[in-house]
Length: 130
Image (cartoon, rainbow, N blue to C red; front, top):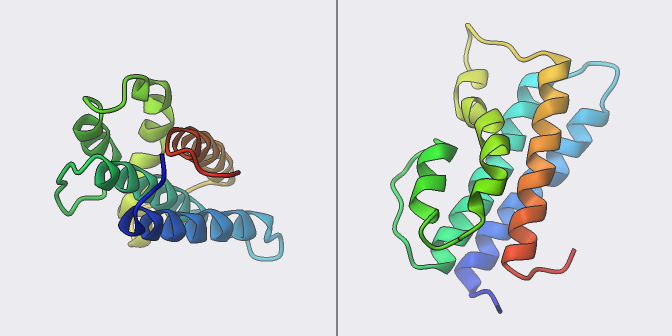
């Protein structure tokens, strides 16, 4: 399925978050697990929104991956395959960017794996080259 320009823009932004997440995860001198978790969540969010745009499904201004999943579910039969990954990532949409919460290195590793699974699912679903 060829993607339209708006879908392509969402995918491009998702890929920036993907690349940024991986670069941040490799940083050893001053680890930044909060940023890793945030950008991993952002990658998944943008892929969800790319798919919603692809199906012409309106969505609210939200960072809640579960809400976005629920909006997309009628259009994508096997979306439940990534529900667990989205559940891992959803809390990192806003909270980790403010005082009072902090992510661990293990949470960052888990977020990266969840992001990779989500990205793989949507790239296959949207028929994007890998």
